[in-house]
Length: 378
Image 1 (cartoon, rainbow, N blue to C red):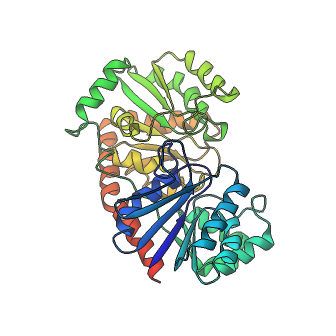
Image 2 (spheres, rainbow, N blue to C red):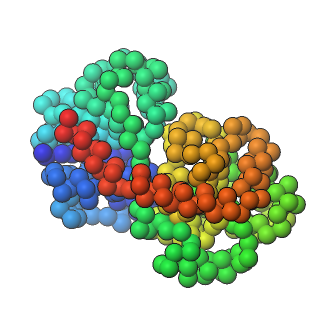
Image 3 (tube, rainbow, N blue to C red):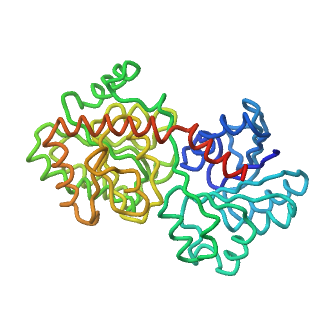
């Protein structure tokens, strides 16, 4: 089949600036491109040509950033090119314009966020979009359940396909390919002989890293060798100091342990920081669809402490590869779960090994690709 995958208007593909959806598309393309003739339509970027073909997959990049501008570019492209199937990522508001421009194509929709919420799309438009699509693929049961709750008529079209991770790139720190990198990062940043707790994500209040920082004084009185690494910035590739970023930095300065704030780390380098860490903590306070950092932490063999928010707990087997904080608003709840892991080193090691095992058996990109191919075939 001739297939068009339409990315969002926020970030380019491949994920030169990061982005979960962009990473997802790049991860599955090698498998989809073997079976179908694929074009990826996304926004342009100074570092990328407007058109290119990589490994047989065609990339077309148009002006975007603003939804209305991008929508017009998408419509213009579809009027000049025909596709058997159009797979739209995370933008139900593109479904009706795409249907008008491509009346005979099948449409599949991938949902990575709560974009069906009434403040994001008018209910009448949402219902019409659901009628037009053949399938709705979601990254977690949580996202699927939100859509079903709002629009029960979508139920038969919804299928959860969990995301994936490159397990050859994200490797445990003790792996022969990563030992040197781990040691260098730790030496350069004063993390030698430390138990390194890692947070990776956007520095915004809904991501909640301040709760982890506020849990650390008590943790550092129990465990003498702790250090914290905060990987991330305000927004992908942007290191601006917002009020929240300033607050986080001020809190971190008061800690009695070493704190490393990396700012934005290029997607091609991020795996090195996972390899340098010993425990991964996701502090999300908002109803997160299911943060992809969980897959990366598992692949890197890190035990995980995450929050009972949105889809995050769906990849945690409690006591096997991690623990779940029920009330992430309270720093004390992070203290409790992190203590449970750090006070039992053998459990900590087993959790990391089990996470790696789950990444290898359940969350490889070839499984995600094969699940998508099944949806397309149907």
